[in-house]
Image 1 (spheres, helix red, strand yellow):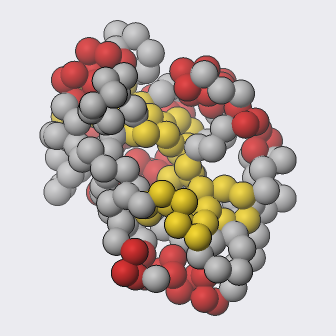
Image 2 (spheres, helix red, strand yellow):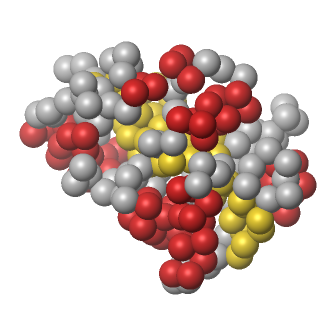
Length: 206
């Protein structure tokens, strides 16, 4: 049975954030809100938790394309090779926001991701998500929660999410109804930005 806790985005209760972080630190999986759709996440440094997420998604961990959800851009060099000024300006302009940026991976990536040439970096404009990673002290890996219904791409109701994910995860955050449009994915690993997926984030910032 997953814990189900209500957290308000405007002013997240620090005690509730602490509860979520404790679950992550002991290798738990959480479903949490972002500025787009609800996401499935775990501590980037917990191998057992990473393997559980990969198993749920039906993929090998080494082949996964999970996003790294960060609190800000201050520790970017832990996961990303040095980037040029133009790229950094794009990141500063767009984040926090509904974007995932594909960037060249550094050689200091956590073990399961060592062979990855690129990583997806996300800094969502959502206080709950940002407070969780800030308190945890490192990113969480994240993947969107897809709905099995072909008409509805993403589940937006936390109670329905709990019903479906109750036995698969350790904690579900109820932050009210989520969005149903995923992040815009931009590849910045080459010379020119390439739009991989057009989602919630406007392309006018580029």
